[in-house]
Length: 157
Image: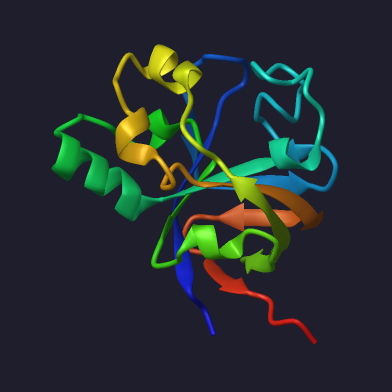
């Protein structure tokens, strides 16, 4: 059963550059998302290796709440996350495998907002995104992710 949907996709070629929306992106295990700064080892934290740097996700609902509750003008790309979702509780996917279209991901840890996010965006977003800043995930099975793809947890066998 599908639990959510991809509503937008974003990549940045280099650290601190604006995120660019894309209609689809190729996910490669051990590398990340093609066209993204971490795939090319040009991200701010590229010297810190690990599976939690491959792809990041955030709920569109969290972005909407930041706008509504904190009156902060903030768009999906401003979050610096790669995949914006709707209808799925990303916090519940920590430690679980899940499918995004044809790609299998493993939720590694929460992607808490940091001082760097505030510096790059120029907005005080940390308080409004605590525990809602998204999910860091590892790519387990390659493929292409498209806007509109379904998101569903993989039930343990």
